[in-house]
Length: 123
Image (cartoon, rainbow, N blue to C red; front, side):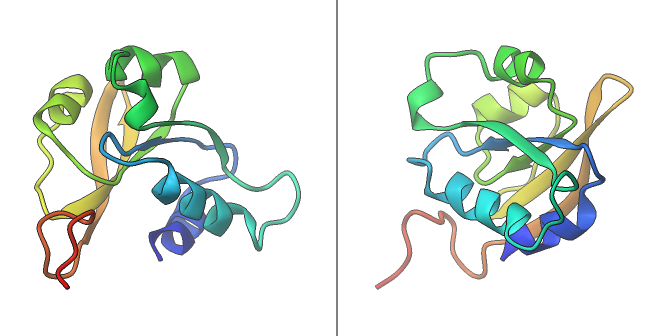
């Protein structure tokens, strides 16, 4: 799972924003579990909020700035996500970003594994 990789990659004190604009919170729930299930108290990365279906009327850029995110995991990219974060992200993968010198930088990508949209798995 990506969450296990994130737990190993994120520095202590990181604030991770989870961006899943088409989702209903399941991806965020799974990542939160993976980030904290084996952690030492006080050492886990903070996941204060996620941007998903309920937040579509909010500005993603303002949302991320307001939560003070140092990192972002983008489960599914879109034109809106790329524009808000000011970074070109390839499709068919989720991505870990880090905010450095005021701009988002790509750290790692995880391909979906043969499909275009993780919410439309083949039968």
